[in-house]
Image (cartoon, rainbow, N blue to C red):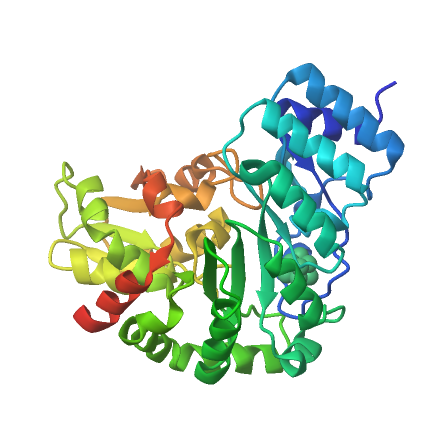
Amino acid sequence: MKTELMEVLEKGAKKGVIPSNVACPIGCKFCYERSMKSIFPRLEFNFIPRYNRESFTYFYNQALKYGKCVQPGRMAELKNGKVYFGKDSDFFETGLSKKEIEKIIEINKEKKAKPFYFYTTGRSLDPEFVRYLTEKYDNYFRIWLSVITFNEKIKRKIITNWTKSEKILEIIKSLKKSKIALIHFNFRQTIKDIETINNLNIKNISICIMMLHYNKFHPSFIKNLAENSYYDFKEIIEYIKENKDRFKNVNIRFLGPPECYAWKNKDLLKKVFKNIQLTKRDIILCSKGSYKVMKNVFEKEVEVSYIPDSFGGSTNFSTAITSKDVIKKVLKIIISKKNIRRIFLPSSIWWIKDKYDYEAKSAKYVKKKFPGIKFNIIKIPKEIINSSLSVEDCYRFYKEIEL
Ligand code: SF4
């Protein structure tokens, strides 16, 4: 008889995903995984312990049977009216041996998979093994290394099982064409961290600079760190733009500020609404992150408002909004505004299997509650969802728009 674990492994192989649900041993104090169950009580995590020889062999045979490329990832399933999720933690903490990791890469090589980035914090990575895989598999082994910062004092404060920078630097020296994620804490530290990587003189390294967010469950020191970092984010961008010759060996990208995504893609957003005759009886509802830009672009034609998401704190993306949040918002609108004709909502709220939110509710659930209102779900183009921001994008955003 097939066990629950075998079912999950088989589904993964069928989809081309190596499922994982390792209780992440890293312990970042800003992690969102820990609060997911408190925020979304209907969300369940898939049952997948650390891999052992037996479970890996089962998965591997299934992968060969279905013949897909296999890349690590989070699987979302719908079962008994609940969303079942896999945790998306460090690939190298999943219990796979070096041989097994290589077998996965071999499958991808055979299938000529697109370059894929294996996410890791580096804690369980042996720099020699990284060098070996990088040289042997070039296109098929790239990592997304979450460095966060090289400042040991900050790391000690925010990560329980942090990895010494000495080891992280050894790993970076073994890489080609990989990505390194840094978190911006303050101007001085971010510049220092970029310089550290730049001075290694390695070609084809991308650095992704992220902003720290907090939700309502994070301790106050995380909230303070996140809020402080927000203020001088603009300075970092200006400095990098004006001193680009100093950072010749790295390609710098940004994952934030959130408003910049909507601003960068405002023409695409206008195009989405091009054939819709908007009136003052319509309302566009969006995430907090895109609100100011949406308002700026559409407010002459239509009312724009945002839906607070369930995470609270500084999170502001549409994927964190649930159908219940939408209902709460619409009820509020109805009290203050009569005569509503249509409400426009982004499809990214129901992103799980392109149909459900975190609580396994679809847009139909919202529509049923308000039979007198017409809801239009606006498909958000993939280019917006998958985009990252260049130095130039962010620089122009801060220069050209006064929000
Ligand atoms: S590595 Fe990722 S999943 Fe693990 S604790 Fe840190 S943020 Fe959470």
